[in-house]
Length: 103
Image (cartoon, rainbow, N blue to C red; front, side, top):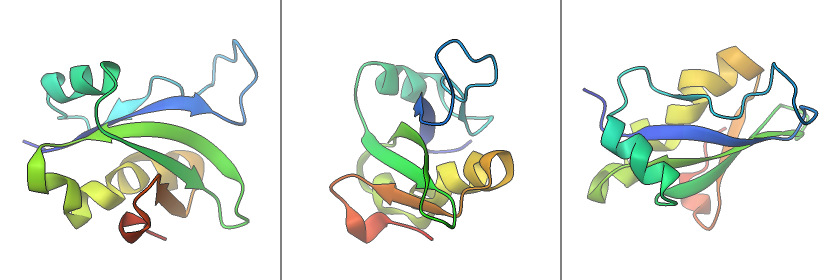
């Protein structure tokens, strides 16, 4: 089982009510339900994903317990799980934690 979860909270390219918005997309597919609930409760860290031109696509939150937040799997997880393939993003930046940025 995966030891982290993430969820998209803002799609910066979608119009309000856009049925193709990424808001609410979460992962990975085997993310623990209690971690997704923790994100919904405001826990975790904020990330932003960008394309190779530096355009901001989405903002989200990710959660893991303890030292799992510092692993490469956690830091790159949203980008690897969804950002690259689903959106074409090439970079993830972590608010307040530049040492965790990937891309």
